[in-house]
Image (cartoon, rainbow, N blue to C red; front, side, top):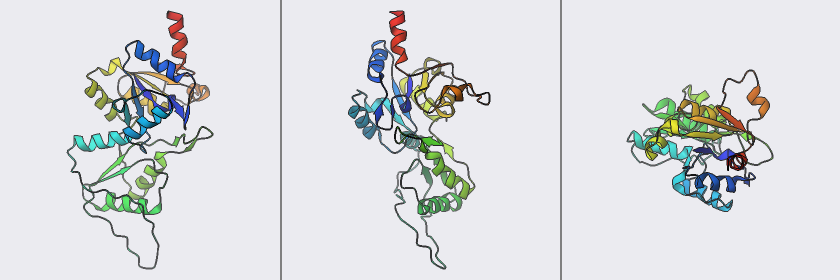
Length: 256
């Protein structure tokens, strides 16, 4: 079972009933994998977040879109070289020409709280002027939940900036791309038809499951509301939907 992080928490707040639900699913022999499009943390850092929230989750069960980007580069034997952190600023003056590393072979764009014009210009120059330079996006999420109080601009806004200025579309390795689903199926040696994708977003989580040939369960405790699901303009329909992941507990009680 693939579970989106948005089903587990909002910001740094754990959603009610999650620990008991995960324990119940594991007791029934379900393999749980936690998939997130948030690229700001490593697997180890996510492990610490799960631990802080009182959840027993190992690093091997966590797959972030940053991991997917690294896995993709490894799959094409991309050489390990230096990386540009982009932590600089531009002081525009008459005649100023911004230099960039002509040897950069891949620009990977993910969510970045410190995104700035230097990073946009540097990434644009690499994508546009370096022969064969890859343009990879960890995700194109329009919004994210940095806190439980409101939605915040997501990684898609950063990707869109460089896509717009370079006039190139990126290769997306996070949800709803099939790359991560293929990777998980191969890693765990299971058929995609045996996987259920549980998530709170129609255009990433549910589409990710559908693109990968899995069953899908939409949970209404996150981004997607019932009215959004039932809107006539919405073409993405999950196999199942429920209010929150802890509804599995009442299902267990009914079948016990």
